[in-house]
Amino acid sequence: MTDTHYRLDWSGSIGWRGGHVDSGDLLDQLDAEHEKIRLLLGGMLGIPIGDPERKAQMDRVSPVIVRHGVIEDELLYPLMARLPEGADGAVSRVAHDDHVRAEAALHALGLLKAKDPDFTREFAVLNEHMTGHMSWEEARVFPALRATVAQAELDELGARARELRLRGRTTPQAPPGVRPPEDHYAPGEKSFRERMHDRFTPAGGWGALRPH
Image (tube, rainbow, N blue to C red):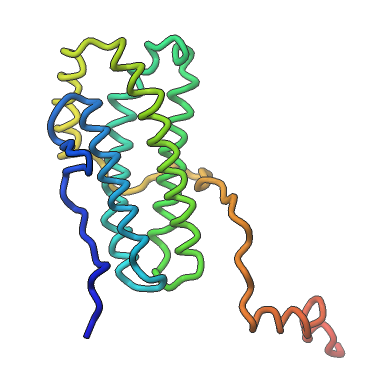
């Protein structure tokens, strides 16, 4: 009998705090979408390593993250330029760079299979990157904009966000040369076979010792 208790499908649009990605003003929608992304990423953690469902779940996460980034780039980050700390554009450039590197990670993951050794590591890096980025926006950006931008404008931007969510790009398209977020994790432990190979194979391999 196949065990399917971990096969979660968080394809809905309701965040765990009750917000809905298609209602409310721009900040309400982005906050709810953050929760949707967290739920989708969290759904990966209960799936055994190497299970093809991990790849299927990643394929569900990718378009949500890409489209979310498109909405923020077009609607949220121009607002940040009005904040005193963002007037020079540096803050929005850093935030946009976060999106570009996330798309590079999504592209790299899209080329891997669930059973590939790098799949789990690349996902862990993406998860950490996205969690940090969304938490920063919720703690610093959203409150500052809520206090300075008129509600009528946030409502208008919310309507535009709903339109973008229907037609926005969903395929990762990181510019050439852009690398995924930096991997700060310790190197993975080598397998027994790899350790034996390193122990008994001279530098350069046995082939280097053959007469020429």
